[in-house]
Amino acid sequence: MIKNLKDLMNEAKNQKKMKLAVAAAQDSDVLAAVVEAAHDGIIEPILVGNVEEIKKIAKDENLDISSFTIIQADKIEESAEIAVKLVSNGEADFLMKGLIDTSILLKAVLNKEYGLRTESQLSHVMLYSSENYHKFLFLTDGGMNITPTLEEKVKITKNAIDVVKALGIKMVKVAALAAKEKVNPKMPVTVEARQLQDMCESGEFGEGVIIEGPLAFDLAVSEKAAEVKNFKSNIAGDVDVLLAPNIEVGNGIGKALTYIAKAESAGIIMGAKVPIVLVSRADSYESKLYSIALGSVVAANIFKGE
Image 1: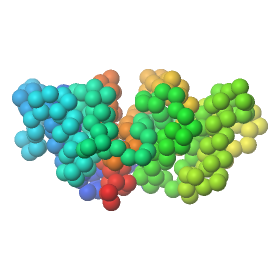
Image 2: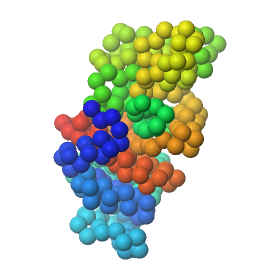
Image 3: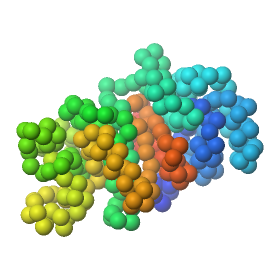
Image 4: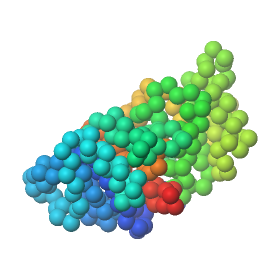
Protein backbone atom coordinates (compact mmCIF):
# COMPACT_ATOMS: atom_id res chain seq x y z
CA MET A 1 0.00 0.00 0.00
CA ILE A 2 1.26 3.48 -0.89
CA LYS A 3 1.28 5.49 2.33
CA ASN A 4 3.23 8.64 1.49
CA LEU A 5 4.69 10.61 -1.39
CA LYS A 6 7.99 8.74 -1.20
CA ASP A 7 6.08 5.49 -1.65
CA LEU A 8 4.17 7.04 -4.56
CA MET A 9 7.39 8.01 -6.32
CA ASN A 10 8.94 4.59 -5.70
CA GLU A 11 5.86 2.82 -7.04
CA ALA A 12 5.91 4.97 -10.16
CA LYS A 13 9.61 4.23 -10.66
CA ASN A 14 9.29 0.49 -10.14
CA GLN A 15 6.29 -0.19 -12.38
CA LYS A 16 6.23 -0.34 -16.17
CA LYS A 17 7.24 3.01 -17.65
CA MET A 18 4.15 4.88 -18.87
CA LYS A 19 4.07 7.02 -22.01
CA LEU A 20 2.91 10.58 -21.29
CA ALA A 21 1.59 12.90 -24.02
CA VAL A 22 2.03 16.56 -23.07
CA ALA A 23 -0.21 19.03 -24.90
CA ALA A 24 1.48 22.40 -25.58
CA ALA A 25 4.70 21.37 -23.87
CA GLN A 26 6.32 24.81 -24.28
CA ASP A 27 6.00 25.58 -20.57
CA SER A 28 9.18 25.77 -18.49
CA ASP A 29 7.72 24.47 -15.21
CA VAL A 30 5.87 21.59 -16.85
CA LEU A 31 8.88 20.72 -18.99
CA ALA A 32 11.17 20.66 -15.95
CA ALA A 33 8.83 18.27 -14.09
CA VAL A 34 8.48 16.05 -17.18
CA VAL A 35 12.28 15.88 -17.58
CA GLU A 36 12.70 14.95 -13.92
CA ALA A 37 10.01 12.27 -14.17
CA ALA A 38 11.67 10.86 -17.27
CA HIS A 39 15.08 10.94 -15.57
CA ASP A 40 13.58 8.98 -12.66
CA GLY A 41 12.31 6.34 -15.08
CA ILE A 42 8.64 7.10 -14.40
CA ILE A 43 7.58 8.13 -17.90
CA GLU A 44 8.50 8.18 -21.54
CA PRO A 45 7.45 11.67 -22.66
CA ILE A 46 5.94 12.66 -25.98
CA LEU A 47 6.05 16.43 -26.25
CA VAL A 48 3.49 18.10 -28.50
CA GLY A 49 3.68 21.79 -29.32
CA ASN A 50 5.93 24.44 -30.81
CA VAL A 51 9.18 22.53 -31.31
CA GLU A 52 11.33 25.66 -31.57
CA GLU A 53 9.95 27.06 -28.31
CA ILE A 54 10.25 23.71 -26.53
CA LYS A 55 13.91 23.36 -27.53
CA LYS A 56 14.65 26.98 -26.56
CA ILE A 57 13.15 26.46 -23.09
CA ALA A 58 15.13 23.25 -22.69
CA LYS A 59 18.34 25.03 -23.67
CA ASP A 60 17.69 28.03 -21.43
CA GLU A 61 16.79 25.82 -18.46
CA ASN A 62 19.55 23.29 -19.16
CA LEU A 63 17.05 20.45 -19.61
CA ASP A 64 18.06 17.38 -21.58
CA ILE A 65 15.23 16.43 -23.96
CA SER A 66 17.44 14.84 -26.60
CA SER A 67 15.84 11.40 -26.18
CA PHE A 68 12.23 12.65 -26.19
CA THR A 69 9.77 12.35 -29.04
CA ILE A 70 8.73 15.89 -30.03
CA ILE A 71 5.82 16.58 -32.38
CA GLN A 72 5.21 19.94 -34.01
CA ALA A 73 1.82 21.63 -33.53
CA ASP A 74 1.36 25.04 -35.12
CA LYS A 75 -1.60 26.01 -32.94
CA ILE A 76 -2.61 25.36 -29.34
CA GLU A 77 -5.80 23.61 -30.48
CA GLU A 78 -3.75 21.34 -32.73
CA SER A 79 -1.47 20.37 -29.86
CA ALA A 80 -4.51 19.25 -27.84
CA GLU A 81 -5.89 17.27 -30.77
CA ILE A 82 -2.57 15.52 -31.47
CA ALA A 83 -1.94 14.69 -27.80
CA VAL A 84 -5.44 13.29 -27.31
CA LYS A 85 -5.19 11.23 -30.50
CA LEU A 86 -1.88 9.76 -29.31
CA VAL A 87 -3.71 8.44 -26.26
CA SER A 88 -6.84 7.29 -28.09
CA ASN A 89 -4.64 5.45 -30.63
CA GLY A 90 -2.74 3.67 -27.86
CA GLU A 91 0.54 5.48 -28.53
CA ALA A 92 0.45 7.14 -25.10
CA ASP A 93 -0.88 5.95 -21.74
CA PHE A 94 -2.02 9.24 -20.22
CA LEU A 95 -2.22 12.96 -20.85
CA MET A 96 -0.84 16.17 -19.36
CA LYS A 97 -1.77 19.83 -19.77
CA GLY A 98 1.01 22.19 -20.73
CA LEU A 99 0.72 25.83 -21.80
CA ILE A 100 -2.89 25.53 -22.86
CA ASP A 101 -6.25 26.58 -21.47
CA THR A 102 -8.02 23.76 -19.66
CA SER A 103 -11.16 24.32 -21.72
CA ILE A 104 -9.28 23.78 -24.99
CA LEU A 105 -7.70 20.56 -23.77
CA LEU A 106 -10.96 19.19 -22.40
CA LYS A 107 -12.77 20.06 -25.63
CA ALA A 108 -10.38 17.70 -27.40
CA VAL A 109 -10.74 15.09 -24.66
CA LEU A 110 -14.53 15.12 -25.10
CA ASN A 111 -14.49 15.14 -28.91
CA LYS A 112 -16.79 12.34 -30.09
CA GLU A 113 -14.63 11.47 -33.09
CA TYR A 114 -11.23 10.95 -31.51
CA GLY A 115 -11.56 11.91 -27.84
CA LEU A 116 -11.44 10.05 -24.55
CA ARG A 117 -15.07 10.45 -23.50
CA THR A 118 -16.70 7.82 -21.28
CA GLU A 119 -20.07 7.49 -19.55
CA SER A 120 -18.52 8.85 -16.38
CA GLN A 121 -18.18 12.44 -15.18
CA LEU A 122 -14.94 14.34 -15.53
CA SER A 123 -13.82 15.34 -12.07
CA HIS A 124 -10.71 16.58 -10.31
CA VAL A 125 -9.13 14.43 -7.61
CA MET A 126 -6.48 15.93 -5.36
CA LEU A 127 -4.18 14.04 -3.04
CA TYR A 128 -2.74 15.85 -0.02
CA SER A 129 0.06 14.84 2.30
CA SER A 130 0.22 16.83 5.53
CA GLU A 131 2.11 16.45 8.78
CA ASN A 132 -1.20 17.22 10.49
CA TYR A 133 -2.96 14.12 9.15
CA HIS A 134 -1.82 10.54 9.51
CA LYS A 135 -2.32 9.43 5.92
CA PHE A 136 -3.17 10.71 2.45
CA LEU A 137 -6.25 12.90 2.26
CA PHE A 138 -8.04 12.93 -1.09
CA LEU A 139 -10.32 15.80 -2.05
CA THR A 140 -12.92 15.99 -4.81
CA ASP A 141 -14.06 18.13 -6.53
CA GLY A 142 -12.60 21.59 -6.07
CA GLY A 143 -11.60 22.23 -9.64
CA MET A 144 -14.21 21.25 -12.19
CA ASN A 145 -17.81 20.60 -11.16
CA ILE A 146 -19.50 23.71 -9.84
CA THR A 147 -22.68 22.42 -8.21
CA PRO A 148 -22.90 18.71 -8.95
CA THR A 149 -26.22 16.87 -8.88
CA LEU A 150 -26.68 13.69 -6.91
CA GLU A 151 -26.11 11.63 -10.06
CA GLU A 152 -22.92 13.56 -10.76
CA LYS A 153 -21.75 13.15 -7.17
CA VAL A 154 -22.08 9.38 -7.56
CA LYS A 155 -19.75 9.47 -10.57
CA ILE A 156 -17.36 11.93 -8.91
CA THR A 157 -17.17 9.68 -5.86
CA LYS A 158 -16.50 6.60 -7.97
CA ASN A 159 -13.66 8.41 -9.73
CA ALA A 160 -12.05 9.23 -6.40
CA ILE A 161 -12.50 5.68 -5.14
CA ASP A 162 -10.71 4.40 -8.24
CA VAL A 163 -7.72 6.64 -7.49
CA VAL A 164 -7.55 5.57 -3.84
CA LYS A 165 -7.76 1.88 -4.70
CA ALA A 166 -5.09 2.29 -7.38
CA LEU A 167 -2.75 3.20 -4.52
CA GLY A 168 -3.46 -0.11 -2.81
CA ILE A 169 -5.90 1.08 -0.14
CA LYS A 170 -8.39 -1.74 0.35
CA MET A 171 -11.04 0.02 2.44
CA VAL A 172 -11.92 3.48 1.17
CA LYS A 173 -13.59 5.80 3.68
CA VAL A 174 -15.53 8.70 2.17
CA ALA A 175 -17.03 11.68 3.98
CA ALA A 176 -19.85 13.43 2.12
CA LEU A 177 -19.28 16.90 3.54
CA ALA A 178 -21.92 19.33 4.71
CA ALA A 179 -22.17 22.12 7.28
CA LYS A 180 -23.80 19.79 9.80
CA GLU A 181 -24.22 16.09 10.37
CA LYS A 182 -27.99 16.04 10.59
CA VAL A 183 -30.25 15.75 7.57
CA ASN A 184 -32.23 18.94 7.05
CA PRO A 185 -34.65 19.26 4.11
CA LYS A 186 -33.87 22.98 4.01
CA MET A 187 -30.25 22.06 3.27
CA PRO A 188 -30.34 19.88 0.12
CA VAL A 189 -26.65 19.05 0.49
CA THR A 190 -27.40 17.13 3.68
CA VAL A 191 -30.18 15.17 1.98
CA GLU A 192 -27.93 14.15 -0.92
CA ALA A 193 -25.12 13.23 1.45
CA ARG A 194 -27.41 10.81 3.28
CA GLN A 195 -28.61 9.42 -0.06
CA LEU A 196 -25.00 8.68 -0.98
CA GLN A 197 -24.55 6.85 2.30
CA ASP A 198 -27.70 4.82 1.67
CA MET A 199 -26.56 4.01 -1.86
CA CYS A 200 -23.22 2.82 -0.55
CA GLU A 201 -24.90 0.57 2.00
CA SER A 202 -27.00 -0.94 -0.81
CA GLY A 203 -23.86 -1.78 -2.80
CA GLU A 204 -23.81 1.04 -5.39
CA PHE A 205 -20.10 1.69 -4.84
CA GLY A 206 -18.96 -1.92 -4.58
CA GLU A 207 -16.99 -3.66 -1.87
CA GLY A 208 -14.38 -2.01 0.29
CA VAL A 209 -16.11 1.36 0.53
CA ILE A 210 -17.72 3.20 3.43
CA ILE A 211 -19.54 6.46 2.79
CA GLU A 212 -20.95 8.54 5.61
CA GLY A 213 -22.92 11.71 5.23
CA PRO A 214 -23.76 14.33 5.97
CA LEU A 215 -20.50 14.86 7.84
CA ALA A 216 -19.03 18.16 8.93
CA PHE A 217 -15.35 18.68 8.18
CA ASP A 218 -14.23 18.52 11.81
CA LEU A 219 -15.96 15.18 12.33
CA ALA A 220 -14.46 13.80 9.13
CA VAL A 221 -10.85 14.48 10.10
CA SER A 222 -10.98 14.36 13.90
CA GLU A 223 -12.00 11.40 16.03
CA LYS A 224 -11.79 13.66 19.08
CA ALA A 225 -14.35 16.05 17.58
CA ALA A 226 -16.71 13.12 17.07
CA GLU A 227 -16.24 12.03 20.67
CA VAL A 228 -16.88 15.52 22.03
CA LYS A 229 -20.08 15.80 19.95
CA ASN A 230 -21.05 12.24 20.87
CA PHE A 231 -21.33 11.41 17.19
CA LYS A 232 -21.10 7.73 16.28
CA SER A 233 -19.10 7.10 13.13
CA ASN A 234 -17.08 4.36 11.50
CA ILE A 235 -14.78 6.79 9.70
CA ALA A 236 -14.41 9.93 11.85
CA GLY A 237 -10.76 10.91 12.07
CA ASP A 238 -9.77 8.31 9.49
CA VAL A 239 -11.34 9.42 6.20
CA ASP A 240 -9.58 8.92 2.90
CA VAL A 241 -11.84 11.01 0.67
CA LEU A 242 -13.50 14.35 1.31
CA LEU A 243 -16.41 14.74 -1.09
CA ALA A 244 -17.14 18.45 -1.39
CA PRO A 245 -20.76 19.51 -1.95
CA ASN A 246 -19.72 22.22 -4.42
CA ILE A 247 -16.66 23.79 -6.00
CA GLU A 248 -16.40 26.62 -3.45
CA VAL A 249 -16.05 24.20 -0.54
CA GLY A 250 -13.63 21.96 -2.42
CA ASN A 251 -11.52 24.84 -3.66
CA GLY A 252 -11.42 26.47 -0.23
CA ILE A 253 -10.39 23.29 1.59
CA GLY A 254 -7.74 22.53 -1.00
CA LYS A 255 -6.14 25.97 -0.84
CA ALA A 256 -6.28 25.96 2.95
CA LEU A 257 -4.43 22.65 2.98
CA THR A 258 -1.82 24.01 0.59
CA TYR A 259 -1.26 27.50 1.95
CA ILE A 260 -2.08 27.16 5.65
CA ALA A 261 -1.37 23.51 6.44
CA LYS A 262 1.57 23.49 3.99
CA ALA A 263 0.43 20.15 2.59
CA GLU A 264 2.16 18.70 -0.45
CA SER A 265 -0.17 17.62 -3.21
CA ALA A 266 -0.81 15.91 -6.50
CA GLY A 267 -3.84 16.14 -8.74
CA ILE A 268 -5.39 14.48 -11.77
CA ILE A 269 -8.64 14.55 -13.70
CA MET A 270 -10.58 11.31 -13.75
CA GLY A 271 -13.61 10.22 -15.74
CA ALA A 272 -11.95 9.99 -19.16
CA LYS A 273 -10.43 6.84 -20.63
CA VAL A 274 -7.10 7.75 -19.01
CA PRO A 275 -5.99 10.05 -16.20
CA ILE A 276 -5.24 13.65 -17.16
CA VAL A 277 -2.51 15.50 -15.29
CA LEU A 278 -3.82 19.03 -14.96
CA VAL A 279 -1.78 21.37 -12.81
CA SER A 280 -2.03 25.06 -12.07
CA ARG A 281 0.78 27.44 -12.95
CA ALA A 282 0.81 28.33 -9.24
CA ASP A 283 1.50 24.71 -8.27
CA SER A 284 4.99 23.95 -7.04
CA TYR A 285 7.52 22.03 -9.09
CA GLU A 286 7.16 19.15 -6.63
CA SER A 287 3.38 19.14 -7.03
CA LYS A 288 3.75 18.85 -10.79
CA LEU A 289 6.19 15.96 -10.38
CA TYR A 290 3.96 14.18 -7.86
CA SER A 291 0.97 14.68 -10.17
CA ILE A 292 2.84 12.97 -13.01
CA ALA A 293 3.70 10.10 -10.68
CA LEU A 294 0.09 9.81 -9.52
CA GLY A 295 -1.18 9.81 -13.10
CA SER A 296 1.36 7.15 -13.99
CA VAL A 297 0.37 4.86 -11.13
CA VAL A 298 -3.36 5.28 -11.81
CA ALA A 299 -2.81 4.67 -15.53
CA ALA A 300 -0.88 1.50 -14.79
CA ASN A 301 -3.34 0.11 -12.23
CA ILE A 302 -6.74 1.08 -13.64
CA PHE A 303 -6.43 1.58 -17.36
CA LYS A 304 -3.80 -1.01 -18.26
CA GLY A 305 -6.40 -3.38 -19.68
CA GLU A 306 -8.24 -0.83 -21.79
